[in-house]
Length: 333
Image (cartoon, rainbow, N blue to C red; front, side):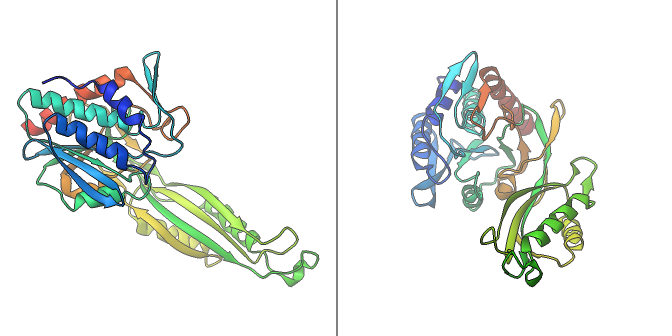
């Protein structure tokens, strides 16, 4: 059995554009590649021509999983000074290649209890992972791949996204006393958020948030009758405490609409691996039926989603070793 060229496979995948919603071509290339290496492959429909790729050679007791969709804009791969550049180099096509290489190394050593679950849609709503969860096997462990700098995730933060909407009264700006500014109402609430005492956790730290979008008003010379902002909280615990703080801080001055909610996730760890808490979230909550979750991958989240996304080739190769060692340790437990 020929070992996997981890850089070659990563470059093949990187060079096929797969911005979320356009994953069909890269998924089918990946499915054909795995069939060519003797895997039984399921192309699970997600939406349109988009599919998940689920593969195995036996009954999986452990699965490697990551995603092959990427954020825009696409840019192709190149290798320079021991660094692999390109969209998806670290998030997460390089990771995917390292997982395939680890699975093949284990298989060459006689281990056939490894599965592969590669999904679409992680970057926008995790629809691929949600679909994959409906066909889960009886696997005991899930090793999910995200850029963790080769550290095992101890936990990932959750998220809580809300839209705050302020209502006012339009008037000619020459006569402000006849109107009521929705923008000023909204600004007052956003300033209050800064002073609030948000929930904290001894391991995950304190909840933080970003005001990501603001819009409002109709014209510069009109008292604005409406305004809204979307606020994205990175959460560390039970969301009821966050809700209580949010509503107490808002104090009825604006409407609060909940848009998205994902819990913080505590992850399985094993002795001998460095651990870290990560402020991002992943597909792990949506792959709950695939086994006890672990999180590990080469590269850093700090360059993911940027125009200089990259990963060190040495880290990709090291990831193959770590994935294989981690799987062996878990399967022997």
